[in-house]
Image (tube, rainbow, N blue to C red; front, side, top):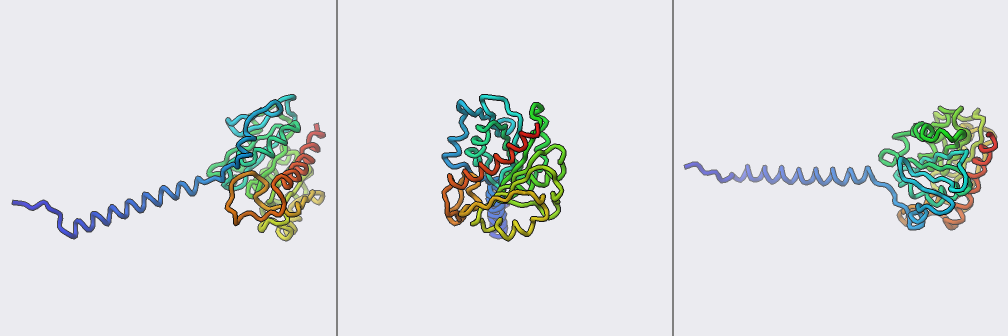
Length: 257
C-alpha cells in the first residue's frame, strides 16, 4: 500500500516555495504602490478644485481651469513636479485662471513629467481657439517644460520654471520670448549656486525671482514629511510671489496678440 504522506524534504520545499511566493507578491504590491505614489493635495487644494462664479474647473481629459467670465486668449500649460498629484497646484492655478488665462495641468505617467514631456502637443491640439501658449513647470516638470520649449520655439510664447532649471542639453540662450526662473532661498537643491551654474542656458533677459525664505515644496499645496519643510515664510506669502512673477510672463504673452 502506497504512503501518500509528504516526506519532510518535500514539505520543506513546499513551504519554502510558498514563503518565496508570498515575499515576491508583497514586494510586487509595495513596488507598484511606490512607483505610482503621488503626494496628495492639502485640504485647501481640494477646496480649490471646486468651480465657482469666476473659474470653471474640469478634470477630463486633464485638470483644467477656465475663466468663467470671458474666453481665454492665452493658455498656460503646467507640468507638475515629480510624484505630485496635479491637484496639489490647484490654489495657484485657480488664481491664474481668475486673471483670465486657460490653465491645464496634465497628469503624467507614474506622476513624472520626464515620461511624457511632449504632452503639451496634445493639450495645444485640444484647444485650437487658444493662439498663444506659455508653458511652465515645477521641479522636474520645469526641466521638461524647458526642454519642450526648446523644441517648440515657434509654438511657446513664454516659459516659467518653478524651483527648477534646464537640463545641461537644453540651451535656450537665444530663445526670443519671455522667461522667468522662480526659486526659494531655502531650497536645498535649486538655490543661488545651482541656478547660477546654468545662467548660460537661459536668455540674458531672463527674470530671476529669488523668494526670500521660500523652499522647494511651497510651490504647491500638497502633503510632505515634516523634515522636508525648509521654508521660513508662510505658504500664502510664497505663493503670492510665485503668482505675481508668473502673471508677468503671461501678461507679456497676451500682448503678443
